[in-house]
Length: 72
Image (cartoon, rainbow, N blue to C red; front, side, top):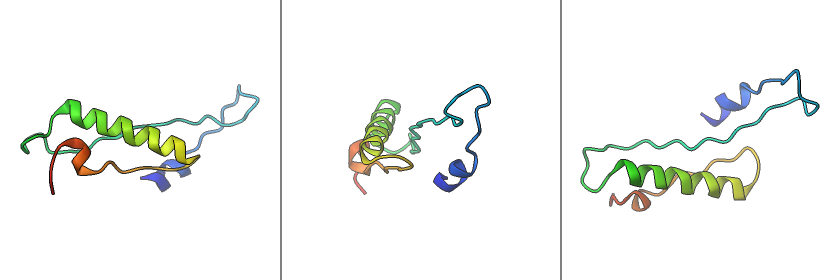
């Protein structure tokens, strides 16, 4: 997904910077599994997003299943 998003960089005609960037947090989980809630998924996605931001540009971070509250 990261590579797909990089290919989709759009030039912003009205911006002196020439490029618009964005940040996204994506959570994927099975809400039917015991202990998985929408709130935990959102918290895990948020934590992973900010960890990726701390690591620098063009990065990503995958939340550990234990953060969501599920043991593998």
